[in-house]
Length: 254
Image (cartoon, rainbow, N blue to C red; front, side, top):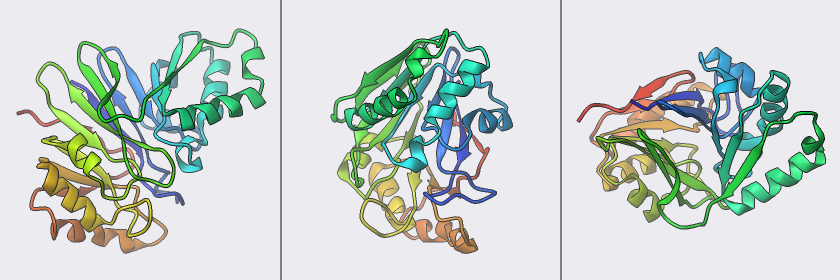
């Protein structure tokens, strides 16, 4: 069954114990990285994942705390001997800038560099990102400071669902994307433009009728984040947990 491993949980300012928010989804044939930060090959190895096995990279939006590791990921895996193609998915706003960034490194001239294909997703709800025999991933635009997508991961053939908000204010599009999900991973940066509080994450979980809620992308510079679970429990009656770096989440059986 597909599994999700949390690689980082912090908001834009990471700490020694909390890397910026990103994650990996493993299926029978795919290793899908959602965003790329820090030094990706090191982080993946710490999580017990082989960087050379990444098949797909989904970029949620073009903010440094979500995409700053893309050049390092491409260069390091090339130097490690990668030859397999890599698929990169995202909105045009993000992928246009990623391509410009990589062109500034003249990466297409790197000797024997592996093929990279960019898939620009439309800003439409529940756009199909990728699908194979045991995994389907859909994307919807959410409400952040720049064009951003949230994700819906469906395990096939039984239909268990995990949803991920990415960075967003409360928005009906996220409720629709997470509708009936077994697991919702929702940001809890705090009140403010482009973000949500833990209480608002709980409200989204309640409106979407999800099975359980994990809070992510929370402030980690002090211990204040430890109260976020209690805040979310005021607006959501189901199980609430704080996502932690290197946590593995399996979709519960129905």
